[in-house]
Image (tube, rainbow, N blue to C red; front, top):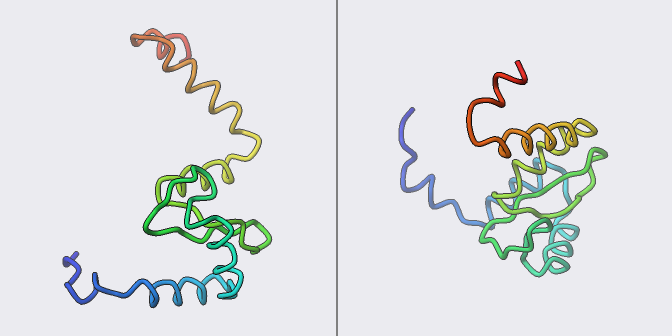
Length: 107
């Protein structure tokens, strides 16, 4: 895969935003209102990020604007749904054991 050219990297933020709004069907007014409500901060971690991503609810409505750090976690929680508690319990059990004995017990 070829490296991105300087011109491709220099796409203005306004153009990127316009494409994202069009792709996800979010009215510009809704986006700007949410950006103002959140004061330019991530809806999850409250970090003031240079780029905030559009997060849509299952019904397609704008849920909020989230940073790149929270984006994969939100997607994981949505994908797992009720299975999230099981995943958290499994991970907690894994990190509580200092050696490989966890693997032997749970195979």
